[in-house]
Image (tube, rainbow, N blue to C red):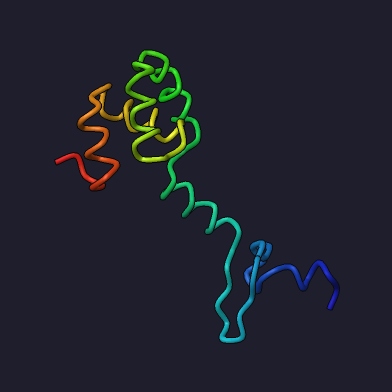
Length: 100
């Protein structure tokens, strides 16, 4: 069997790029993992909007969140941007995980 035929399935389509094959027949496919990560983490195209909005946030509010929670500045800016600049809501969201 040639390499080209080995790389094709029985239906004629090329085999998916597989990262790991397990003995029980399961496999991790690169395309499926990337799709799942994009779904969970979101699209990177949405981040510039948060960064643009972060320039309108108060520097003191960002510093307060960074110093009190000891988190990266980018995470504090993102939390404040999601809370529309409301420090109390941003802190509550970061600590509890919900905005209630």
